[in-house]
Amino acid sequence: MAKALDSFLEENLQQLKSQGLYNEIDVVEGANGPEIQINGKRLINLSSNNYLGLATNQELKEVAKRAIDQYGVGAGAVRTINGTLDLHDQLEAKIAEFKGTEAAISYQSGFNCNMAAISAVMGKDDCILSDQLNHASIIDGCRLSKAHIVAYTHSDMDDLRKKAREAVESGRYKKIMVITDGVFSMDGDLAKLPDIVEIAKEFDLITYVDDAHGSGVTGKGRGTVKHFGLEKDIDFQIGTLSKAIGVVGGYVAGKRKLIDWLKVRSRPFLFSTAVPPGDVAAIIAAINMLMDSNELTEKLWENGNYFKEGLKQLGFDIGNSETPITPCIIGEEKLTQRFSKRLLEEGVYAKAIVYPTVPRGTGRIRNMPTAGHSKAMLDKALSIFEKVGRELGVI
Ligand SMILES: *Cc1c(COP(=O)(O)O)cnc(C)c1O
Image 1 (cartoon, rainbow, N blue to C red):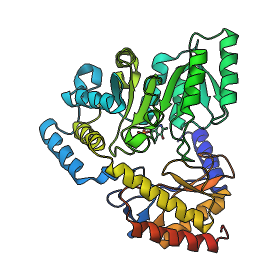
Image 2 (cartoon, protein in one colour):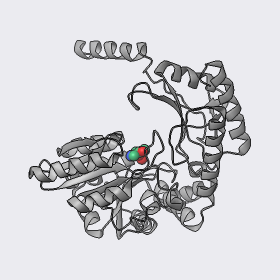
Image 3 (cartoon, rainbow, N blue to C red):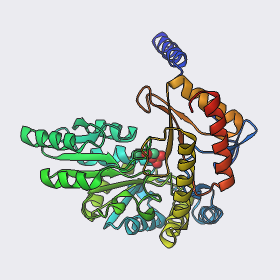
Image 4 (cartoon, rainbow, N blue to C red):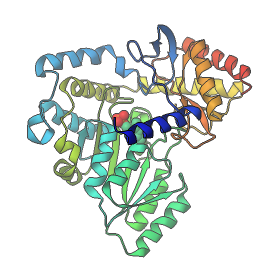
């Protein structure tokens, strides 16, 4: 190893470890369901994005197996050579139907989708107004575009309006985009989309909503844009197929013209192999399930509300979540890590989220109750939170 690399790694790893910021990776032995096994221990799982339990759904597993038998395990090429199987076309039509848009394009992941879509449209003569708490993939996607990036204070509409006006009045930009998460994943709050749309109309902003945590959850499962009834007003509706949908992938839903452009200009679509057929078939079946019935989404909200209420009653600070995402804010990084470790020893897997994922001093245990949890599991988890909370002086 080059000396420069060796000393860089040594120094930086040591620094992270001494600050309690080094994340040890846990290995799950088996399926990522409502209960998981790690190091031979059964744990109640409050850390997956498997909101509706679809990642482990029996019917979807059967659908994926049948598609593998018919098509094989890989798509064989990038989408623009000959990796577009009829399944991919069906998937994109299904996503458009689900989202209420003219068309859709799918990608290999949500992260990838933000790399692809922003830079396909925005360039160095453009400006992006970006919520300060946007997901890492949005931040990276914006940087890749080489557009001028202006962060606005989280969900502060006065600040957004002010920065939009400044961008327009500067006369420097050909296009201006406002970009936001639909659901902010660390706090569970919703973007103020009606206000954002109003400001966008006032200043002719392109609107881009990444609703990775919204689909299958908000808007009776159709997402945050639908929740606010703004399907006609958002140019880019981004989603992931790896959270509530339970498989893998990402997408943009929007006008036909936009999707046509992305199909010829978004680089991960052109230069990276398509999602495998087993996954695509399972995703189509998962979206069909959501379109047929609200049952799983309702169960998710029921469990989310039950768990939130339980933590609140115990005296924990659960922030201002408007979704089933339930942060339990502890504060200091090392205490947060210790809290999570004690939960693990007692039988609950709930991950500590600390700086740099969230601001310093706002370390939290982020709980993701799902439709797959039983009341008994949630009750047991609450009693363990109570025990650890008292032991560590948090409540
Ligand atoms: C999780 C997430 C992504 C990444 O999605 P993947 O499909 O896991 O790559 C992108 N954007 C937001 C807002 C997310 O929460």
